[in-house]
Image 1 (tube, rainbow, N blue to C red):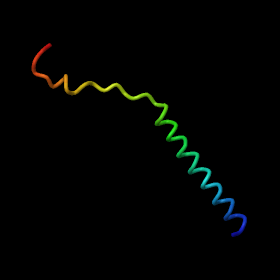
Image 2: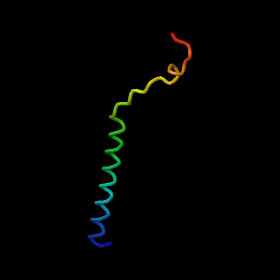
Image 3: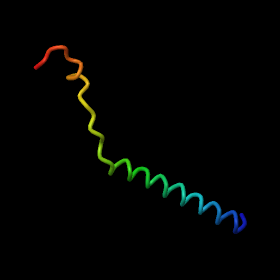
Image 4: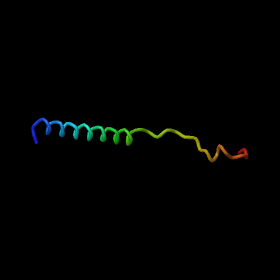
Amino acid sequence: MNTSALILMVTVQVTVTALAAWFFYKILVTKPMAEPDSYSENDDVER
């Protein structure tokens, strides 16, 4: 394997690993959106 191929391979692996780590970080840190309780909204009886 020549030097340019090795540099390209390492660059791509580092880029893909960094992107995957960033997406996992975003998933773990982002607060969940407040969703309404669909069960209570579908009740016909008023409480």
